[in-house]
Image 1 (cartoon, rainbow, N blue to C red):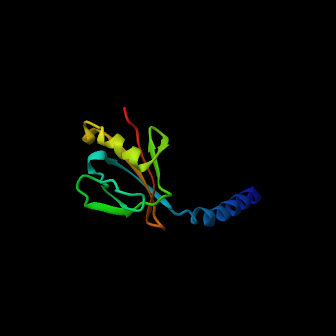
Image 2: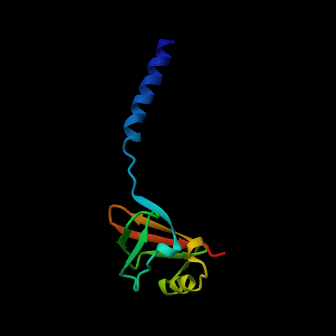
Length: 113
């Protein structure tokens, strides 16, 4: 009985250091489309409000940034065209994924109904 308890304690103690090594690398923001300011070029910046009361947050985009419409990759130009065609941007949401260490937007996606 003591052997099982000792072995269980040993296994659990070995698992603790592994759990402590997790770090957040990317952060996803789901924001209203009306609060998003899209970049003019692939090497520009995107601005958005993470919440209704928050200030605008400006972050770089690059040629590596993936633009998705209905889970399909598109160019930034096509993404801007889709957004321009939206009638009610307050009811549409966009997901912005930010790489925290590089301070770079890696993906911007929207589902169009």
